Amino acid sequence: MQRRRFFAQALAGTAAVASAAVGRHALAGLPEPVIRTTPDTAGPWTPPGVTGAGRPYRPVVTLNGWTLPFRLKDGVKEFHLVAEPVVREFAPGFSVNLWGYNGSSPGPTIEVVEGDRVRIYVTNRLPEHTTIHWHGQRLPNGMDGVGGLNQPQIPPGKTFVYEFVARRPGTFMYHPHADEMVQMAMGMMGFWVTHPQGRHPWIANVDRDYCFLLNAFDVTPGARTPNVNTMLDFNIWAWNSRVFPGIDPLVARLGERVRVRIGNLTMTNHPIHIHGIEFEVTGTDGGPTRPESRWMEVTADIAVGQMRQLEFIADEEGDWAMHCHKSHHTMGAMGHGVPTMIGVDHRGLVQRIQRVVPDYMVMGERGMADMGEMEMPLPDNTFPMMTGTGPYGPIEMGGMFTTLKVRHDQPPGDYRDPGWYRQPPGTQAYPVAADQAPAAPSAPTPPASAHGAHTAPASPAPAHGTHAAPRAPFDARKPHGGHHGHHH
Image (cartoon, rainbow, N blue to C red):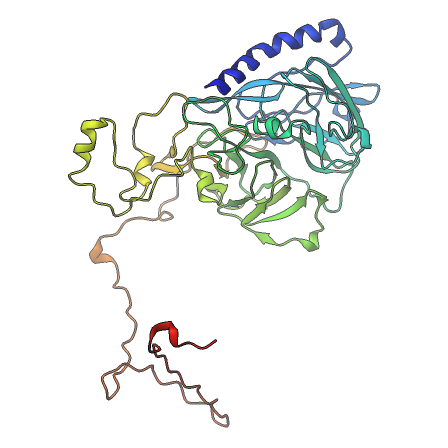
């Protein structure tokens, strides 16, 4: 309780400290910071007069996020990031106190073009110092953002500026390198995309370009602030600080080429699996991959600190699941210490327990699927372990799960959710009566030996002109005297 009170007081007092230290007159020459707090997926942002701000490019769409606008000044793209406390809605009814940038966590995506000179103003409205590291970028050493090593820390209420050239195209991230354990655990991170300057032999043109970050938090049920000292036992697994069913779907028109850029800033790896299609890994931390090095996959394992670009043709219509294949990562807050109760007979016990604990409910006797539609009391601001409903009932997923929705009539450039897919007649699994199912084939019974024991079927005779290899004798006996008769 004292720790939560500390964070609450810090969150409440930060804005006043920052505004006193950084007044409007000091910010007059800076680009006005753009703030956005909604967790909805923003449409692609195309800068006005894009031909004067870099080569025209296909803007990315950040899943449950947005792209930070810039201003063009003397040929330099200027951005303004504000590090500050934010409140992020992970799913309807579940919000968390985080630290982020410009009103959101993760912060807004930064999009530039290879060869652009960028200038990023960073204003610190946190209760402690911070920096920003531009993860994966080639830049001057003094712009790398490691506090104490490359630069002084940015004190609360102060603004620093970073300036460098976006030297290579690719998928990158940004995050602090100051009190990193706390600031990363509180949600300080963002995405960066550098588009190629011209036609690149290893970078294909795509019809849709998505990006999002993998992140994880430990939020005690009923609390609103993450436990920053957690190393392994996280209970909220998120994409861009959203959990299913709060994660928006990825949509595509049938036949479109789709790119999905994913960055991992959690404490563990995540095998990302997409149903219904095969994809290629077309880019990594180091940039685009050579076409001859690629192969088809349906799951890509993304390690800590890595970025991956997945590309595919959306050539199968339907609603296809997309998720981390670690099963606990597609759940909400879990009680990891709860014992397995499968097969335990609760009859005669439940009523007696309810006399002492009226809200007691049987859990796990037949597995955990019942929790998908179970209504049970939870502390306020607590995300249930299973939630989300599809057209046929509970989906029994949470956390790192969403859908890829492919439609033949999805208009090009339209990112609106088309609703649930209706399968054509004859293309959906259906029930049959027990007497309509064919009998399961049984294994042939081996012939009995003269002693009544079963023997293996005879091997086929060797082909004419060949000799069968002699069979090694097989004799399995339990040694007398247990294991004590073994010699080593």
